Image (tube, rainbow, N blue to C red; front, side, top):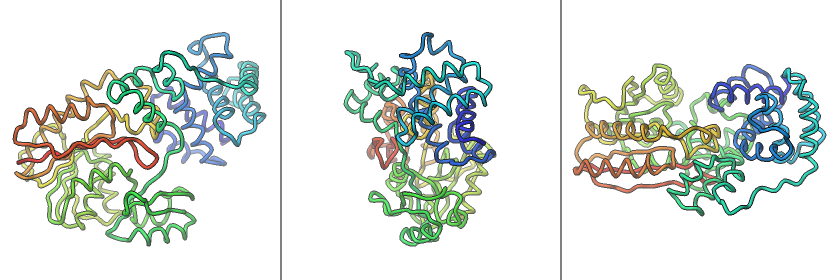
Length: 421
């Protein structure tokens, strides 16, 4: 299938079904052959993460409000503007002409004249983003982030830090993998990947991780099939290192799917001890089980379990990880559709997070460590939940709360070490 048509279909499905970008992209790329999957990925993620900025640009060349446009025509226009203003290697003629062709292939030929006219005007005009007295509005347009979310970040972190967060929320995203040290060393894995034309280097921040620099999809490699690594961001690995599970420990992973944190814990434990990995659904449990088998890990006891409900049949644990469901505000550069949600659900989510943390504490041995974590940057979900817990559980002390700022090498992340005295 034509690359632009495939990107259009993916974007339309994400928009119409409110689907996750990564799952939709993987599914349709597998189903339909693309000349360049890297181009399709760049175009899809680029349009998603820059949607507000693209609409601001378009609004200057349209005689009708954006909301009154046919949704499919709007998608084609956004794709065209993104190619013109954010993809340096796409010639103007290709961006415009291919967009017109795309309108006809996608049964939007009735709008081909509009698409041609608007994109030609965009291509010949220098776009200036707003610089007003309303800094929230300016940041919203510049970084394609809803004003309500910009305001939330400003309330939590201030204007300067918010702009840094937003700067990191757009653009290329690095890929890190966690070396399965039960099977191979980082140095050996670099060499093995090179044999498959995949260029990687050992991370400067974590010597058990590799950054993928160039090459085919590393998750289709023989090294992946042999269980030499799994995907995991550096911030997540930092959290597990600070939890510090050791040989012989009993460890609980309360919300474990897809299993990356359990896998890293097993490696740090030398595959010696016992990890109870819980999740609510069969298909998620299977993900963990399949991943453990691929990696050669046999100490993970995978179970269906509701993390907010106490199970008296379980043993006491030395270490417990509560990587709770969250708003995901630390990973919007990987899943840009997240930032366009209505975050009115956060208060209800915080109650669930607290209930999971409270329930997990009942399984912990004296002197044990309870680690609370999210991939979010909302203080309501992070510091506030932990402070409430500490206020209501005097037998626990604060072993440190860490907010990992989103940067080139890491997603945004939060974790708190809560120690039972």
